[in-house]
Amino acid sequence: MELSERQERIIEIVKEQGPITGENIADQLGLTRATLRPDLAILTMAGYLDARPRVGYFFTGKTGTELLTEKLKKFKVGEFQSVPIVVDENVSAYDAVINMFLEDVGTIFVTDENAKLTGILSRKDLLRASIGNQDLSAVPVHIIMTRMPNIAYCSAEDLLLDAAQILIERQIDGLPVVEEKEDGLEVIGRLTKTNIAKALVELGRDEHL
Ligand code: ADP
Image 1 (cartoon, rainbow, N blue to C red):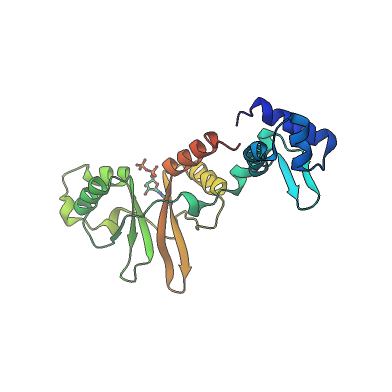
Image 2: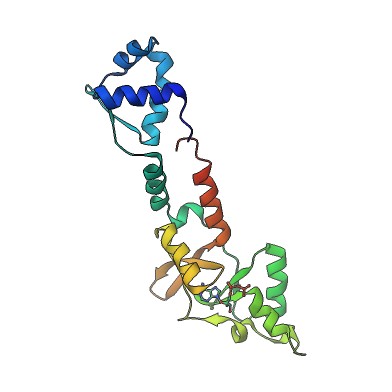
């Protein structure tokens, strides 16, 4: 974030004299404690300053870039995942295409009769199936999907950076977010390149960094 001139001055004072009380900083700037309060709150929230009760403010020593990196490394998949679109493995490729358009997604997850993950369908899987003269309504998706155990997945608690790395390494657009159950993987979300782009924008536009 862009620091205001006053916020820069506060940091300088705390760097040189910390730990220092809010009262004392306000005196030095010729301002009231109340006027200063929002600036101190912002600087503390952003991680530049830390405050200890009865001691005062002190400088954490972290630069803007360090704070940005720290925040990025804490992002979890669960904070950014979208709703998954799931079909049964016996639905037709034709119905999967319709689903893809209606739900406006590029990847559909396929599950068995116990609603556990068995496969993934991408746009290209469906395009491939449509080459030639086969009747897509007669082709069940389990014939054309990428199937377990070759599916890359993640959990909501995983770091967003780790999930992004898998997308790059496997050259795919998305991952199912799953919960492991006794009888397989339950799909609870979808993490795509768009979610990663959203995280990047959130980080870049964070007023407090
Ligand atoms: P598209 O086919 O639209 O370019 P992808 O690059 O995501 O989309 O998919 C490429 C291939 O990888 C497809 O055959 C698809 O079934 C498969 N695939 C997609 N996501 C995964 C995943 N999470 N794990 C394993 N395979 C995947």
